[in-house]
Amino acid sequence: MKKMKIILSLIVLGIIMISCNNNDDTASSYPYAVKMTDAPGPYQQVNVDLLGVEVTGDAGETVTLNVKKGIYNLLDLTNGKTKLIATDTLQISKVAQIRLILGTRNTVVVDNTTYPLSTPSAEQSGLKLQVHQTLQQGILYNVLLDFDANKSIVNTGNGAYKLKPVVRTIVAAESGNIKGKITPVGSSAVVTAVDVLTGLSYSTSVSATGEFLVMGLPSGTYNVTITPVLPLLPVTKSTIVVTAGNTYDLGPIAF
Image (cartoon, rainbow, N blue to C red; front, side):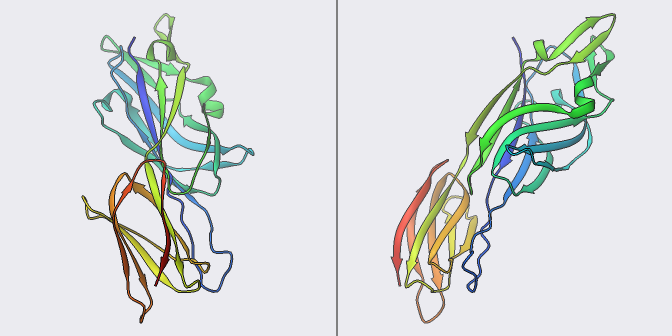
């Protein structure tokens, strides 16, 4: 049985806003990106008219993402190809549901003939995709929505087709963090983690209590430099290995 797959990459990075004069030194937000991909199915085309993407929190709050509207042929997105369809920043950490809002221009192509693909429930309230995921700062999640093509598209006869999604949701963490604490407390410092392989750098600031958390790091090996205000000198921690879904604790760092 062949299946269509849509990957919604939920890139959750978490941003810490630091102020030396403010004891409330963390304000959590969750940048969100949605991508699509697909695997071959028993159709020539499956065209989806995407109008919107919404995220619903466990308390019922709804966030409408910035969506790239358009008609997407899911069968163009095969062999690892992906398509970014929506981005935004969430202020909620618990996602209960993702909804894809579809228009009326959905079609399926079978034997070189194009048929309308009706989605009555989607046109009214959106395709509801259950997630029930608690987001953590700095963790990149891939939410894999596994569509069963043979059950999701129903041939009702007389050239009529309906989209009744049968979906299995799989969530995996794909990034990690590095944390630590400097002394003396109250010292200002910038923390930079550099990926040894790619050279990409990720930075944050030390809080008023001396703590720091560099978030959203792809798995790999990093050199971490803590640079305080002069006359204190920088401290570097080398070959720090970051793995998906984990936080590496550098422990206390004294200047």
